[in-house]
Amino acid sequence: MKVLVIYCHPNPESFTAAVRDTVLARIGNKAEVRVRDLYAEDFQPLLTREELANHYDPSNVEPVKDHVEDLKWCDTLILIYPTWWYGLPAMIKGWLDRVMLPEVAFLMPDAVNTNIRPGLTHIERLAVFTTYGASWWLTRFIGAPGRRTILRGVRLLCAKRCRTAFATHYLMDSSTPESRKRHLDRVARKTDRLIA
Picture 1 (cartoon, rainbow, N blue to C red):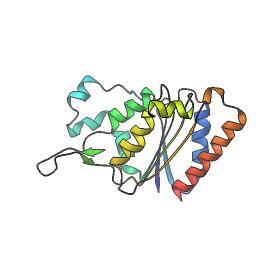
Picture 2: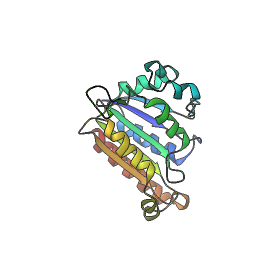
Picture 3: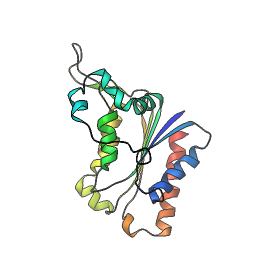
Picture 4: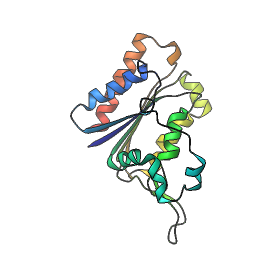
């Protein structure tokens, strides 16, 4: 098993870091693991004008070649981030924009196929571990766009029977030590099932 963890939080002492550490502890030596800490490596999330102009050119992978190589390497993709304004942080959205490229994450229509096709069929497991400041019901009312982007949109690009896992701590701004412990326990269980 080859696990790629995309971790995104500006504060290295955040609760999101505790989530990351829980995931990595549960994986232990059961798999090869690569961690991309987007803030620590100063990942640039902005899709440049040049990158957009060359979006469909295979050479467009060069600015993010190491991330693309990690994505092609893994069979398990885990994203760990806080949810802000009901959606993905700009850093994660920028990672998707710049790394999930045509002919990498998806195949473009051609003479035979009229629609895009999955390009991440080697990814058999996909997980999202996040936090929300809002409650469950308010998040559902808004539509949980971040969750949908990853577990519906990205999931469709993965293997047909790609297993998924999702865990979030709602009402993070009013969390307690007990609620945070329960969430870390839930993350541990979901990670165990994902990599089983």
